[in-house]
Length: 262
Ligand SMILES: [Zn+2]
Image (cartoon, protein in one colour):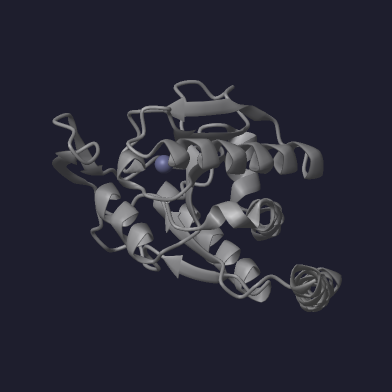
């Protein structure tokens, strides 16, 4: 008889516990989707996104060498001067900074925090140091803005470069690939810029020092007369950087949970 009473009391407590447990859980799970939906409806990003922008090159090259990555004995020039517009005569480091400052403005308008590796041309920062600045900024994405060079005037199109699979942090390679594919899609769909296929490189200065996803955008060829003049046009620059910002925003908001520090 005692056993029956104890069993009955236990059953009452267990079902009460289960009831309250469910109720409490329901309370919690109800709150989360509502706040997530509210955020999505307003189109607002959580305020924690940081992007580091590196305007490629600088006014004077630094021909000293530095290791290509942590633990690598192979060295590479610290930083070069870049190329020059075949028609406009604009130096690549100037064009890269103009476009990068536009990209900064556009991203900040969208609530994304931006850290620049440089905001002037007359400065001396190696590519390793630029990567270390990005690492120190805890950026979720490191974007490097460049313009291309070719031995012939005919070469044209934007170009996206990421580290190859030998990057010391495998996740950096995988995430960089995702970001690059999104950027290529946006460039091809929204502006009909011909993009040369995604290029994965182990010999690009600074890539192996980077501890977060990194994408290098070659905006077009400064050795191509048409593209040189297009890239010098402020309205084209803005259009190109808006598309780049759209791609960055899509990358940051997609698979948010994977954006924790690597
Ligand atoms: Zn360059």
